[in-house]
Length: 229
Image (cartoon, rainbow, N blue to C red):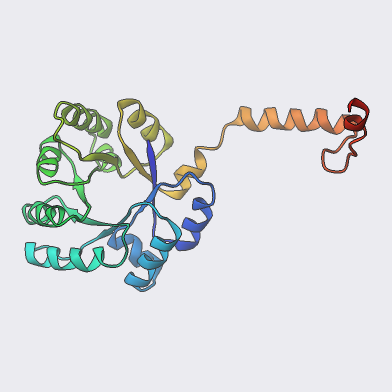
């Protein structure tokens, strides 16, 4: 499973990208607004930091506007993925941009029927919103299972399932078990994935035992190596 980070905070992206675990970035108008910075400046910086796909969303709601904005966004960097909403005009724009060779992430997916339409329109990614479905009392992960099953049934469907609106590591684990291709993860959730009390407890015990030896790997000489030579 590929990990995208769902943020427009460049400092946060630099920090997480240094782990080597980040495959791409997703942004949206809300995240860009939260950064308080110029839209295009932020996108260029992100594309410089992360060589993988960077989703940038159009703000137009009509077909012509989405295509025009999509072309402008795609011209910013080779790793830009144009993000378009799952509407009639959005799918038309997806088809046009995809036919031109631009990668498109179709977002705001809440049903398997919508996901089928996105695949037929040539979407590179489909973004089903797991957490938002959970909020309404519907199991969002069931949607992921349905889409993965449908896509696997058709060789000509090349669209990747990008699990969005992730709220916790459980969403990621279950989606990975289902075979979802990508999860876009808030920074806090990714950092929480490192944590387990038994890891902390085990490390504490190892370090305590090592301290009792009075040794240091960095400050010790290589006398034992010389004796064995």
